[in-house]
Length: 343
Figure 1 (cartoon, rainbow, N blue to C red):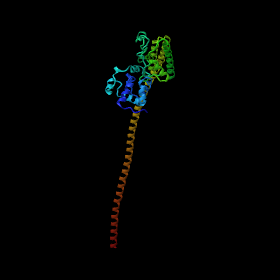
Figure 2 (cartoon, one colour):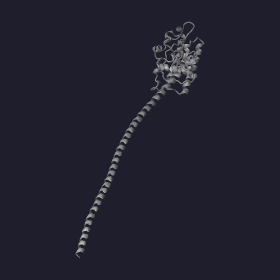
Figure 3 (cartoon, rainbow, N blue to C red):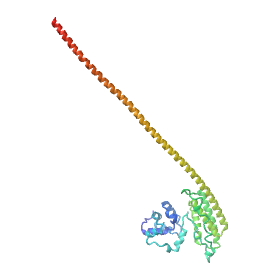
C-alpha cells in the first residue's frame, strides 16, 4: 500500500494532476472501484496521473481522489479555489498540461475534439474543417443506450475482435497518411485509446463502442483514406445493427421480467390476504372451541357441586331419625319399670 496522503499540498498536487480526468459527469463518480478504474486507464506515458501515482502510490491517490469527489471539488472550480487557495488558475495552465488534458480520457469518453492535421506550412489551410470532423453519431441519442441504468454489452470475444480490427484499419490508414504528411499528436488520440482498449482487453459497453467507431470513421475521413473510411463505416453499421438488436432483446426481456414481477406481486398480495383470512379463521375457531371447552367444564363442575349438596342433605336426614328412636326406648324402659312395681 502506498504512503498516506493527507496534507493540503498533496491533495492540491493530486487534484491538479487528475482534474482533467474527472470532469463533467465523471466528476459525479462516487464508487471507489470506478475511481480506481479511471485512474488505471490514464497511466499513459506523459500523463500527470502516472507521475502522481509514482510519487504517492496508487492506493493513496485513489483515496484522495475519492475524497475530493465526495466533497464535490471536481464539480466546481469555485470549490476547488476555496479549498486550495494557491491553486493555479485555469487560464494560466501550461501548454503541456493542455495537451495532456486532451490525451487523457477514460476508455468510455473518447472524442476527437481538437483533431488537427499539420503540414509544413499551414495546418488550418490544409486540414479539415470542424464540420468535417463532427461525430458521425452522438452515442447519447443511440437506440443502444443503457436500459434503465443497465449497460448493454456485446459478447466480449466479438467486442474484442471488433476493437482489434478497428485498431488495425486505423493504424494502416495512419501509416499510409504518415508516408505523405506529418501527423500532429492530437490526431492520434483516439487511435491510441482504441489500441489501449484492444491491447489490454478492456471491457467497453455499447455506448463506448459507438463512440470509438464514430471517432475512428471521422479520423479515417480526416486522413483522406476512402478505403479505410468505407471499411470502418461498414464495421460501425454492422456493430450498431447488432447493438440495436441486442438492446431490443434486452428491452423485451426487461418487459417480460416486469410483467412477471407484477404477476408475482399480485399473487403475493393474494397469498398475504389468504394468510390473513386463515389466521382470522383460526383465531375465531380457537375462541369458539375455547368457549365450548369452558362450557363443558362448567357443566362438570355444576354436577359435582349438586352431588355434594345432595350428600350433605342425606346425612342430615339420618341424624334426625336417631333422636326419636332414642326417646321411644326411654319411654319403653319407663313403662317396663312401672309394670315391675305393680307386680
